[in-house]
Image (cartoon, rainbow, N blue to C red; front, side):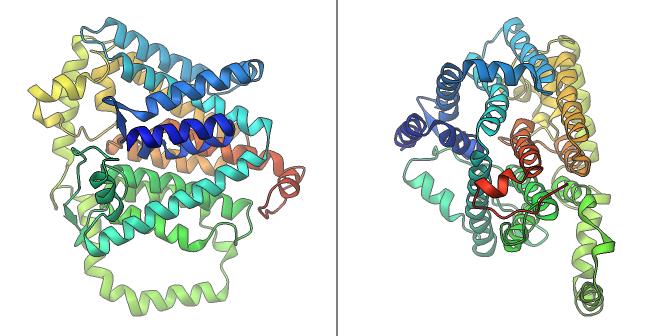
Length: 422
């Protein structure tokens, strides 16, 4: 089945390169689970789209890379990855190529949006459809405690037989994972797409383009994961969208009715959630002591090769075999410290700084809260298959929507109805 999916996507990219690339990039967290020949199909897909697109748009992509804010930070991270792998005893070249190529996909997406604004419209439509599939499956999984689509994918051989099904319960609910192999991945996906769609709905789009039911499904699925760091991140990311000036009398009435009629029944349940965040030992799972122990172990491994680390995937292939505390290292920084050393930590910090600089420079300041929220999430939990690069895809789409709306080009050349900005 993996070969079939790979073949279909390659053929589609040959027929409609730009649209095929958008589908591959948006679906990459799920596609990365599917394997062919022991390697994720995203390795083949990214290698193909890079080669074909660079040949087709060589001058354009070179210009895009050269003038892109993310160029310096991405280049430094690529150097860090290369040096970490080159200086390590055990090489992981396929993983290196996959990770390096993912940074080039940022510039390809920027270039696609720059070439034709209709592709931004297509990006949004694919995002909405994919989000509906993910969240509806997650909703059914939580209610019936059965992951319908993932179970089906394993049975037909699309997902590997080693696919891990989450069976844990938190806050009285089965922890949802939907099409991902980790509940934190679903939390990361829901957070990014929720911030993206809420930003568009509040700033640019008419309400019928971004269904409120999808936003509700996204925030519910984020909660269904039971990931405390995701809940904290969402509280931070939603800050710029709370505008009391826009509240009408009916909104205050709804809030009052909720406080009087509903909150008393939910109070014990909400208290349990708050206690699990403020007192990390209150429930099973990671806690402050565990994270501190993981930090000390990571620092010890980092000191063995301080600047360039011990090599790609060293944390999960070697270190965790000797130190079980590193299993599921509860932060993006711990594997980074071990694998890529100080240089990798600096490069990763620069990626976040470049993202913040980008949104401030392009007058999207309110979205900085969403980036800060993701940084908190990323620092408190590991988010497999949902990388900062994936977040950048959505940031680039927001920028081009804003850019084209200035002259009303988007309304004239797409099927979406937006509010013009001045």
